[in-house]
Image (cartoon, rainbow, N blue to C red; front, side, top):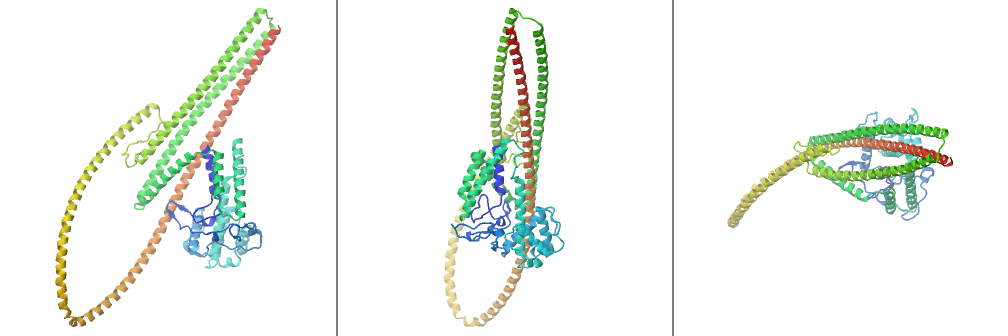
Length: 640
């Protein structure tokens, strides 16, 4: 429960729009939406643009004060007459192409009905721009319809109503696809997309009155979180107005308060981070392996998804079994409630009979003494039974705690065993070292006898696997020894060859001396070779000309191959991004299903506790009523 609360708090923080972005870090709460990179694994659409303190983009307006000086009010960017300068690099081709890719991805994901060709998004017409604007604005206002006339005036008016901090003139709407106007129009579309994403994130959070459907504890926790967040926002905003752009100390203090509020276990977080690092390394290794064989990667993804599906199915079966057990307990409680009701009716009849006897008979001193003795005996019986009930409940509670501890230790050991088995590639059934055997232990699916049988079977398979590994080790050792002998033999051969090389070098030296003598003789014949050298020079020039022509042709072929490679790489990146999004949607659906199931079980448990407490209170009320009757009966008997 504590981890769930912390995850909800972390989700609220991570979904808020970021305010400031530095070259080396990002603030916990804010960053510029236009500079946010979208990546998955190692597939990055573009390199992050370095941002200096002089070129930071403010969402509300341009920064006009120096470092350490108070800022003007941010509302002046919306309602004042000051013209804000757009600090986004809209004339940078890299940034424009990145924005075009983000626009294409958003329209594709949301099911844009029109054509989305790459050439169209490079320089769209006014009609196509209006269609894209209407489709994006429809995400904010589903009832919006673009008028057929004067769209050139309607679009700037809508942006001004949405408090778009920059100016999009009416004249630019007549030639949207022009090189000098399309970047400004594209920037307006990207701002509108960021506005849509912020609306989606806020609608998911249910910031106002989100926890009033829960019990009182949840309302108090929501109020505590809202108070902490409001204090944090007020402190950072006051510092921002004084000229600060980073809030590292405030971020750390806010995180410490959140951890204290939700009782976060730092050791558990460190363990989860270690597991995340291990999984990230594994994903990186798998991505490197998948670069050589994409078909094998798809098969591995299919096998992993099938394994996850089996786990989810087994978890669903466990939930169904738990539901059946809970229904059985409900039926038992209903039977017990009916039995208690019948017992109460019997006690009521006995009470009426005793009252009738009390009204119709006269008591003697012996009867009074007998009644007092029976009263004392009944009190002793009630006391002993109450004590026995308390002892039984305490014993039951101790046994349940001990059972929970033992079960937790068993689950930890089982998790360690499964982790080690996955590292050794023994799990799942189709793993590399599993050899078709199932090494996974399922202690809560079957009875204790099947658990012992499964354990013994796994031990036998592991012993066999150890013997096979030892045999393979001995074989590799023998192979290593043979390779070492071969290496020594090669080394001796190298020594022999080196001696031969020394002899050959001595012979070369002698030949060089002879060559010097021959060169002296040939110097006298240089005049005869002058004409032949001229002809050779002409021939060399002709060859150089042919080589230059061949080099130009080779460079053209290289450019064509490079263009084809870039096209193939873009297609591959698109396919990988689509697969990543599909996998993320599947995991999100499974996580939501598990969260809903957990919430339903908790609600059911609360209702059962209420029914049990109500039944106990009714029994106590009935016993108290019987005691009052007995007390009245005793008082009347004493009076008689």
